[in-house]
Length: 338
Image (cartoon, rainbow, N blue to C red; front, top):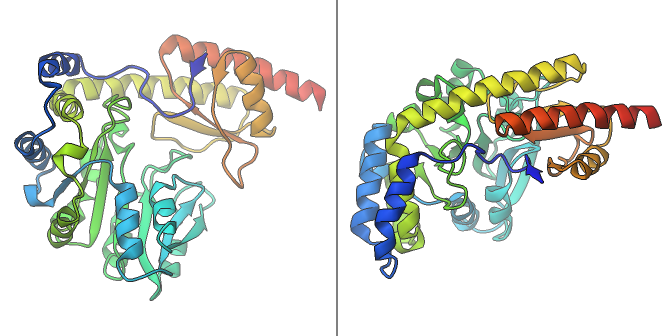
């Protein structure tokens, strides 16, 4: 089975990660320590050009949902684009938070004016993914930055940039520039995607200084919760910027082949800037996915309100070529039945 369903990086992590893990194996009997975690946080701070006090380690979207959901009691609203990735929204719901989904615009992007219009006295936080998941679209930079500047004066804004490093200009596009300037904007990154560490999950969030201190007092980002191997692997991955450029380049090339295939098949699609594509197959996604699984290609689940749309992760070169062939045949078969 070829797994093109979870937006994993099929090309794997930097070779330096293997070296770092091998060196760390002799210390597996030891917990991850605060010294290693702090050194990793300092490495991130230098990379992001922020004070180390603003770096909170870990895959903390769930913790952020719990924190903002419980901070002022239940009933607070959490704005997000729908469909979307809901780890933060679901966590907030466990402590009484209310998710308020805002549909994407006609370009399948975050609808910034509609989101801004939904902010009210009940809003506890606004959560955005940029580039968006599952569509892969990215908001126009100047409009997005103005939106963040204005809305963050009314409510905290969490920007999930899990896929931003797949864009060549990610450094200037990143919302971290607003965090540096003191805006109430949090920026989340993960090593699961372009760095290829989904099997050793770890990430970090760049947070306003006062909030970062509050989160740490609650134990969020503690070294022991991160894992010794995870820290070593992520540190090595972050240092290998040439590997990231290589993964970005081959992903862009392979994405272009997917787009050409969709255009050849005359299938409407979103303008992806990520390691996946999102398109309207003209048939229920469940039927397309089932037929693709028979042909040894797993493309995963459907997304509410986009029942005919499918998301396919960009895999290795031969996997993509095979999957494109299978997609052509599946669509032909489904069309012949209808």
